[in-house]
Image 1 (spheres, rainbow, N blue to C red):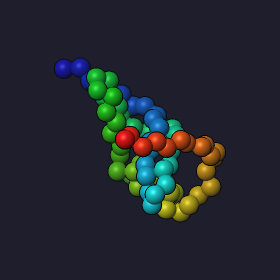
Image 2 (cartoon, one colour):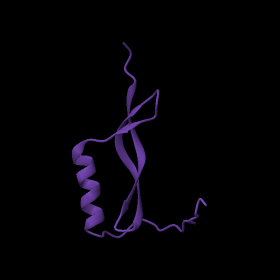
Image 3 (cartoon, rainbow, N blue to C red):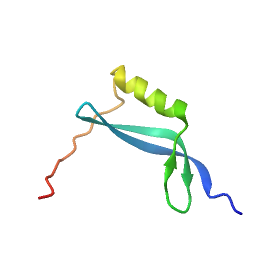
Image 4 (tube, rainbow, N blue to C red):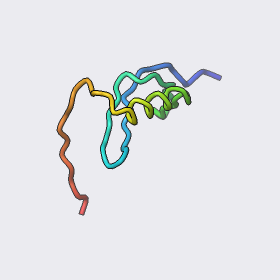
Length: 69
């Protein structure tokens, strides 16, 4: 059976307290067949810590928001 998981750096998005955060260059294992991303628990904890600590972002972007209806 061939290994379908590869190590990669991905972009992780999360909504926290009504704000969206984009975290780039996050280490993950990615399924080559489905694209599903898997993160080590310590990686997720690290992301949660620096969002809660309100660290200064590398850059800011403006994002449009639409209603589906």
